[in-house]
Image 1 (spheres, rainbow, N blue to C red):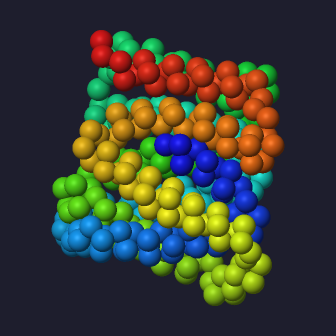
Image 2 (spheres, one colour):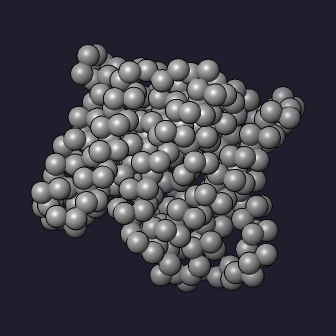
Length: 276
């Protein structure tokens, strides 16, 4: 979770080197390679059941969409604010989606938590003081990223049914890599390589290998063990590290509404997951 938080500052640097689709392709390509090496080291099977192909392709679509929105939001917005907003809203939106899919009414704690979560989201987006702020500084991209991640969690939570979670992640990133390359093309890829320096490759390694291959895969394993809703609750650790990393590496001083909304969102997640 700490790596996820710091990945927002790292992603901000990467967003300066190319379009969101091109940077997403590079991230997935390195992730695919590093996951392959991890699978070889652990001697994990690469086989996925045919019944899981539909889940695999849908998950690939959502992870591609999330990563595109991640870099698109960072290209126009602040890393610290985006990191707090997305990671606070992820578990709240995930729970709301689960309730809708299960067609059940929320418990008392879930209802209270979801309401507080809505208030936290409104504060983070500055909707309380400026209704149009949802369209400012990447907020709309970060909000859509939260929704796509919540939906992604629902499909990765089923991954253990079709094979090893690591193998599911490996093929998911492989499909995403190929799909994004078809959109970005060889010219944009070569242009980014020509501009790449030590800062680019260093942040790409951290973003793809440490954050995506290892941290995200561990998260997917957690969703397969304890479910998407509860696994998402651990994301409350990320806002602090996202704000801290952006402050240290990007000199982005956290604003009052970001701190207030982030703390309120953490309270909401705690209440949602608290037993009645």
